[in-house]
Image (tube, rainbow, N blue to C red; front, side, top):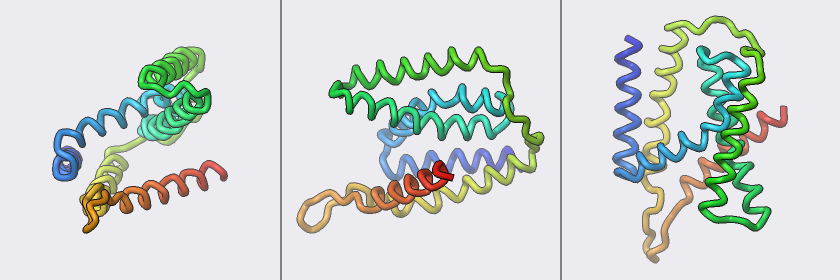
Length: 169
């Protein structure tokens, strides 16, 4: 059942990406995964490499850290593709080296079971179903020929607001 649900999730993500952006969607997915890399050593240090919490935490930390590192580059007045890449690589390498000095896991969590995995995969199956339609109009042209990004902005704004509220706690 878990394998079937996982395949259904992967297929739904692939179909949603293809329907929304074609090959560009897969490029965006690759870029997203790259931006998450700096946080993985932090997630692994906190919860150990085998627990799903380490991967999810690492993804969140990686996204936030990449955003912070790129903000520093912009704030320093050095915004360029090369500067962004070097800053990201330095942060990633530094965190992977730091990870080696931390005895893992710092936090011991209950064992992750197949039942937990099944619940997570079923929950994640809802994501393409819920965001596919709003993102389908991303960048569409209105009657004046302007590109419309309202759906993306609102979803991104809500996500960042929720992230800020959680981090403030």
